Length: 254
Length: 254
DNA sequence: ACTTGTGAACAGATTCACAGCA
DNA sequence: TGCTGTGAATCTGTTCACAAGT
Image 1 (cartoon, rainbow over the protein chains, first blue to last red):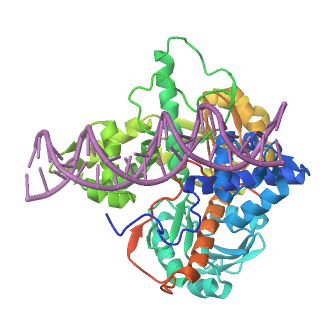
Image 2: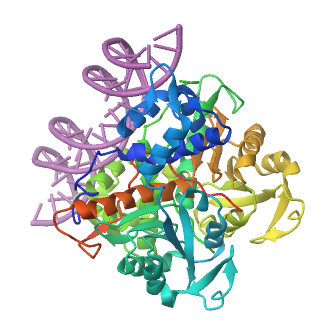
Image 3: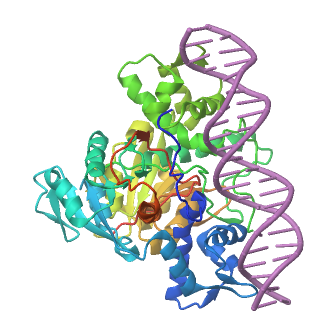
């Protein structure tokens, strides 16, 4: 099918596995919490527990970044925070635009986790003229007509699409044409983009369907299991993620 | 580490791979669109294109469900829609509660994709007394005090957490104690749950960080690549998902 | 004594390529 | 002939278990 390989084969400096990249933000969050509590060092076991993974995986992940720990001691919290931030590219500023300021777009604009990590909402864009001029989260909403100019003036390379499904591809095309090379898509549609552009999707409905699948399994099994065990409590487990695949789900605004 | 296996080892009737389960909703969406256009049959190649995967993967996925296609012809759209719906458990009604009616919670409540797939928002719950009594998307917001009663009265087994991070674990514990066995978590925290409870997380900040990582790579490579190739257009590719791991990201309300 | 870092074994998912059937 | 279904090969990610270092 289609064009070619899934991702850039190019100069791949050190080649960190995709699965590892997806966990780095998790480690970073846990480390930041430790840092705020002024914890100086942490063992792989402790940090793994805080991040909800197992320690072998964590150590393997870190080994791709380099040898940042000290045997017999653990990892220096501050140092690791810095190294992971740098690896993720969070030491620089990433201006982001959000297109589609419905319920969801507004929620995203208000989301505090942005600024804290080097992401800055440079502009909000919506096709509804009634919204133009209004402010959401202190940021003025601008009209879609000016999309290209906004992207270029702000040097935006990351776009968030929170429009209805029907508008998503069109918005995507314009974003890409204007120079955006990474897109986070909340509309429940498959976006088609040129090579070299990354798309990640977040789809609520898909997540719920996956839960329903497992839920159904549970219900069916209950009757089949030897012991009549109800849904009552048991030993705790860290919420290990289900989907082994990178597939994510999507939310759509009103 | 910790308690035990990641997921139920039990009677696993036919054992559909997790990666396949995560794609079924994608196929279902594409099939539903075809169904609405009254397309009677579809080939693996066509359907794969519509779902944004390659056809070999799609055929392998379907092979886990059974032999629902016809060689030389393709798949019957209506029949597949039914089979996948059944497999995902969407032929039954799933009452869902949303806890935390901030910006995000409201967006979720208004999300149309719910009802269309057997999910019904049975109740909205928030800790803020000022919200109690108000309606969002036509559904009255109820106070957290009544959480247990609401769960039980409505036979809810799926809960959506859209509270601030600080409240998430506590809400989670109460949901689980009241009988919820599947949780969709939008709060940027690792939830700890008893065995037998499924948690999926959606984390905006993580998704953005993953994009930033790749974005940074691109920028660095540009200088390093022999051809000075700009970010201009190229051949189209279907937006193949990045993260091979199930890790998903999280959004947090104001 | 303790904890990292990692080769090697394992498990799971994807892709290939073709036999089997309409 | 055309397209599905699937074994076999490959690739990616996880886990084990221990050597190496402090």
